[in-house]
Length: 113
View 1: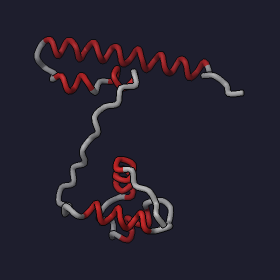
View 2 (view 1 turned 30 degrees about the vertical axis):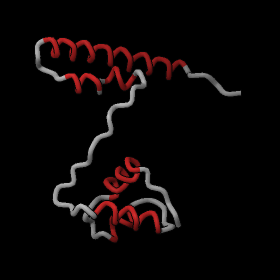
View 3 (view 1 turned 45 degrees about the vertical axis):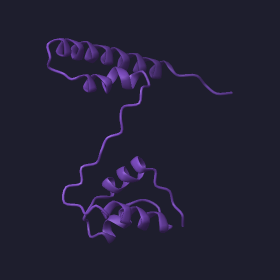
């Protein structure tokens, strides 16, 4: 038997919804004044709280060769080691393990080894 949401979870959800509504109202006011574009409204907290998936973000890779991330992905997927710290070390700290992890999640990397 699975337990339903606890009171704490329900309170957290309601608090998040109240905050989202407040932010949504402020964004609507700014939109009416011409200060916010419609794309910003589409990714507002209310949209997120309502379960609408925001558009995928693009990575900014200043100074990286175009083939850098595909090479990193190929290397990570072919290696049986878990995590990303080992790869960051092997790349001489050129990118952090957090950056590698973000790319892996965003791009749906999976181990082949």
